[in-house]
Image (cartoon, rainbow, N blue to C red):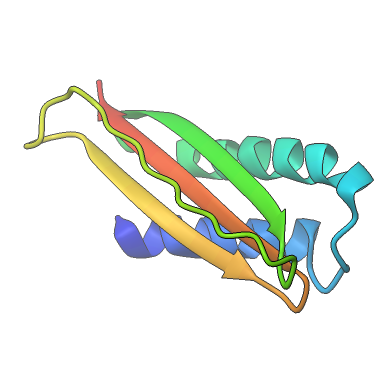
Length: 102
């Protein structure tokens, strides 16, 4: 499933952000579109999961560091999490997908 998540997230971000330069005023719209598109496409896989999708968008070359972590209390044998990094020349995006078995 990791490859499916990677493909879905990267295709969504390619479409939504693409080669656009970082624009602070667009980040809320981009992240909202990204999580909605990614979630919709994950559901279309018809796998027995509920999905939680988060998206962090930041400007590259801004001199700022970024550390993102998350934890869940769940069944390690059935539930999964995935992290996708996507970037262009001025935008870095981190998408976290949590797949919780139904």
